[in-house]
Image 1 (tube, helix red, strand yellow):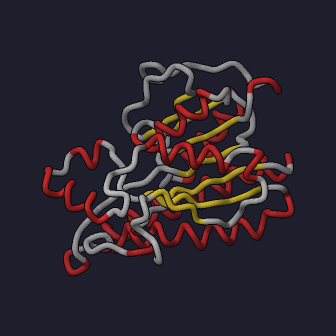
Image 2 (spheres, one colour):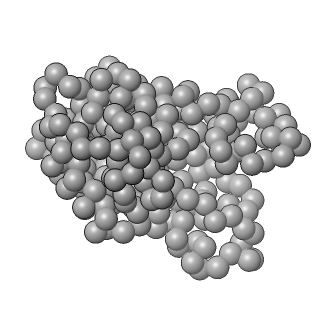
Length: 249
C-alpha cells in the first residue's frame, strides 16, 4: 500500500464526511487532502505512482483513465471508510506540443484522463450520493480551459470540457441535494512550476494581476469551502483561483 498508507477504521457519524481526492499525492491534490484531514474528515486519495506519506489518508492506486480501476478504487473506499460524500476530481496529465506536431494519442490520452476521468469518477460517486440525498463534486479545471494556451490544445480542451460536464451534472442531480462545481486554478507554485527557469517564472508571474503564483493551499481552501454545508446554494459555478489572470475569459 506504500509508506504512510494504512487501513482506516470504518467511518462513524462523528468523524466528518468521507472525501475522495483523485491525484492526491502531490501539488493541489495533496494540499486538498491535507486540508480535509486537518478539519476532521476521513480522506482517501488515489495515485498512479508514489503514494503520499500522510498516515491519515487511505491511499488507493488508480488510473482514472481505466474504468475498472475507478470502480475498484471506489469499492475499496466504501469498504474501509464508507460511501464517498465529497469527490474532488483532480487527477490529470499534460502532453504539451504544437498542434501540427501533436499526435492523436497525445490528444486523446489527455482528454481520456482529464475529462473522461472526471466523468468516470463523478458517475461512480453519484450512486451513493443520490441515496443519501447529499453530495459535493468539485472538478479541477484550469484558467487555460477558458483562455486557451498555445501548445496546450489537448489540455485546454479537456479542462474546458469539465465545465460543460459539471454544469450538466449540476442540473441533473440538483434535486437530490448534490452540488457540482468547478475550480479553475491559474499559475500555482508546484513541482511542475519549480522546473521552470527564473525568466519563465518571472514572465508568468508578471502576467498575473496580483503579480505572483498562487499556492496549493489557496486552491485547497476554495475547494474545502465548496464542499462545506455553507456552500449548499452554490452549484454549476466556476470559481477561479488565478490571481485575476483569467478575468473576462
